[in-house]
Image (cartoon, rainbow, N blue to C red; front, side):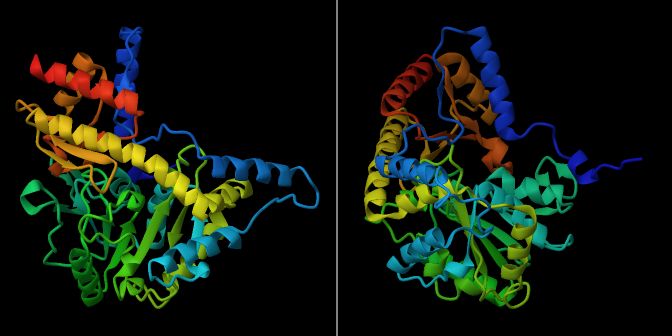
Length: 408
């Protein structure tokens, strides 16, 4: 008789965003004439930039000729894209070999899959609130323990709250693996250089691996604070950290799917260079590579023209975030993030819990946010808003939000 994975069986049936989608679908069915504005899931709304579109058309033409046709590509990614990404790191004074860059179809996939390289007894710590994939993928592998009101018993949660400026505290007993996300999803805050230096030194002292999610580095405002775009800007990080990045937000590729992981061959954690070789083995076994057409589009996004065009789009989302911050603060709400990231982390008003506030906004304003409790124990009492709507929808959503709160 087939025996199922018992760790999956312990998971809830509904992923956070699936539950949100279910509630929104019910609201739309009950109110078919109402325009619902989504500020929940972080999907982009602006079209792909011309440089990317032109590259896609050219790559499609390549596929129509026997001389330029491409079938299976290298699982690690085409050299033209890996070399372009290595040059982007070099522009920030970071030396990354193209051989240490692994192209994929999404940072979420990489973050969820990388834990396959760890032994079952590996101890895992996450910042709290936390992007659910970090926790769920480890629970599916059997590291979660049992579910409690304070989260999974087998996962170490490092509370990040307004009281500690959303900076995770150092645990007294070091875990084997720590997930860090900066700029952070969901809080929208970012770790400065001195804080990242301290974490790298902690990892070096304790033989800990840092899983560094830098998917939102393109939103960092270099005119404010000293926020590294890459953990490899910190000396020694290549010995203790794996970095994950995505084109989803930086170039609007949520529908195209392209990302990459940097797994340095100089990693000491897990054995000298062993994680690099193991990740290569995993990818060649389970992955057939990001499509040639998509990688050519990503290469175009990395070009000087492509970066200029994508930065113009990012400025639209930054402008949305600024409007949202100002509106919510004027309403007396406590708002965090939204400066170095497309996310705003907002305290729920009037003693509402996270899901009550979600439902209040949906029912009273037809605006969708994400309940903070879905991101971990420290997320209760907060809601996440994304700045990815169109400028017109963002303005309308803030008008509705104002009316709903003023009449509550």
